Image 1 (tube, rainbow, N blue to C red):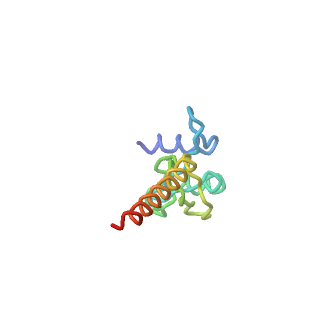
Image 2 (spheres, rainbow, N blue to C red):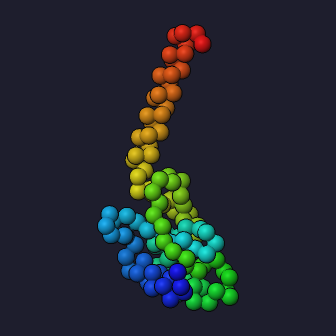
Image 3 (cartoon, one colour):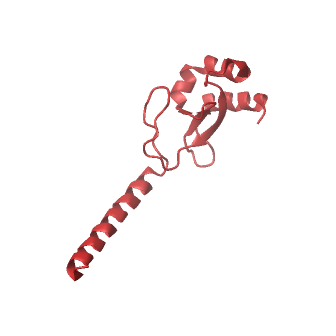
Amino acid sequence: MTKHERINKLKTFVRNPYVWPGGYTQIMLASDGGGICHKCVKENFRQILESTKNAFLNDDWAFEDTFINWDDVDLHCDHCSERMPAEYEDSVEELGEQMREETLKHQSYEDEIDV
C-alpha cells in the first residue's frame, strides 16, 4: 500500500471505524505492529497523520493498515490499554466451555474404568 493509500485509509477509518458488510469494528495497525483503538486514533489523529506522512520520524505512530479482532479475547489498545472485544468472543467462550465439559467427561470416564 502506498503512503497516499495509507493516508486515505486512515482518514476513512477516523470517520467510520466499522467495515461493511458486517459492521465489524476495525482496529488500527501501527508501524510497530501494535493495535490502537478508534478512540485513541481519533484523539491523536494529527500525530498519526504526521508520522504516516513522514516515515523518518520513526515514532511507531505511523498508520500501516486496519484489522479486525476476530477472536483474541485479551487484546488491548497499545495506547490506552482499553480492552478491544473480539467479534466472535461469544463463540470463543462457548468453545472454551464445551472443551472444559468434554475434558471433565473424559476424566470422569477414566476414573470409572481406572485407567
